[in-house]
Figure 1: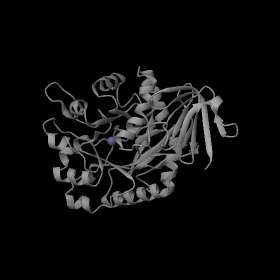
Figure 2: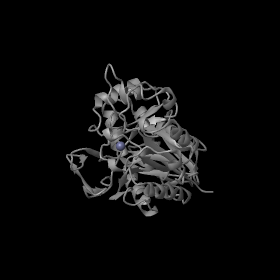
Figure 3: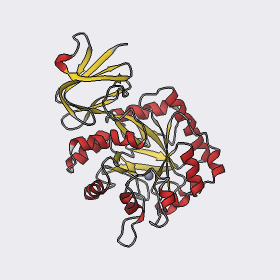
Length: 377
Ligand SMILES: [Zn+2]
């Protein structure tokens, strides 16, 4: 057993701050946070001046990175490339996200995700299946020809993983209660998204199956006085979390701040919805035969629809702090809240016995280093 440490002027452990402190870990687990001057003299330590150590960031919606789209390659090398690209932006763990695809591709992605988790690919937490059980009226950049409403027999044909987290984004109005029940029994975390449901279509029974809402405000029926839509229902469902894209393009900062006021603490979390262009030098890629390009920091398809975001987790955190959210709340929105949403109880805080995962940020909240299960990158 070898103990190692990283230290900085400030550590935020998920609850409290520590000054001039070190995070000490042993193999893959956190041992302690202690004052730098109390560290054993012979410990291997990396110090980060003018920096802050926070719980490792977790991004539950990552379509690609480092020039790779998960939709185009679900293999282990692609997953490693995506995880590595997002580490440059402070992300310790992520869920590669499959945009609406064929049942064959979904099955492959599920098998590959479980394998990658078993093989301990650094940063790999599970998989996010975003569609194709979506509403054509809110298709965004998805290929609506692939959409359908699955029967329980359709769902039973998929190789649902046992060791990898699985998050499914579905338009609940396109799902029967039986289908939602089936997913729940398979320990799938269910998020409502790309949905055009009215508030009355989001019945109490269906809502009780919904753990969260995917990229709040985007690709969902809007909030109006007479019709709360998916947005109003998401904001008013205290049990459910909402993910939100904070690039300042997908959601206006005021709408973000309003959502933050409306949701109970811990129920609004940051996702990037990043594509292949993050952590890469190129600014275009192909998805389902369509070319998607970065124009003015926006990713758009030929129809002009927003197609994911060109942003990393560290920049997303910096944005919400600039919009007026307290630093510790912004850090939790990128670490402890997504850990809770994914029902993982040993991530999201720097506590003894937790997985050794941390994100080191400089004064401008740019990522300096990332610790993943005791491996420092
Ligand atoms: Zn989406």
